[in-house]
Length: 190
Image 1: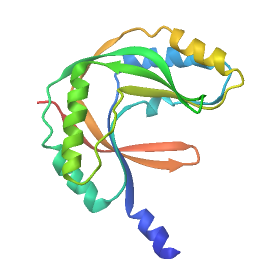
Image 2 (image 1 turned 45 degrees about the vertical axis):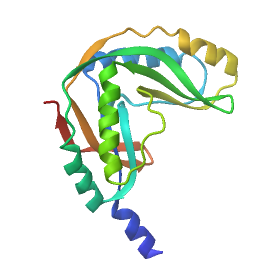
Image 3 (image 1 turned 30 degrees about the vertical axis):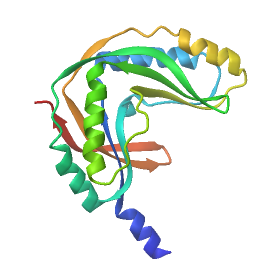
Image 4 (image 1 turned 180 degrees about the vertical axis):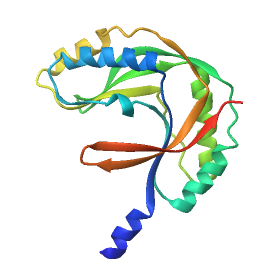
């Protein structure tokens, strides 16, 4: 048992993401308040944890993290303009599970694809389908599914535009209070 615990301690739960400027976070918070007015059991994503995942790497050893860091330095991208899109839902067997806001801008797809290709070189499986979104709430239970699923797409999200000039490699530690994220490295546009 000790070996299993030691093994898990040597692994880092990692992902590659972008985060958002304050004006975007303010709009997301407003939308979250609207979502909160619709009755559901679950939780809103903490503002400090809002991000768009470009690639989830999972639990990897520290040596592999160093390989990832080096490979990500080879990703070339120019600063791009993105904007907030509509709100929507992911459901599982007809039950709402995730409330999200779409992040639009064609260049984000190119960046994700290049990251995906670089990570594939290191043995990480390519994404089957990437959806450029940020998770704003996780749903455990909704009494009136039809009402909930009908109201979410009607929440008006302001199409705020913002510049993206960097992405990050992050470490995620799952704690009883929720995930705690730590920046491993940032990668700037060129």
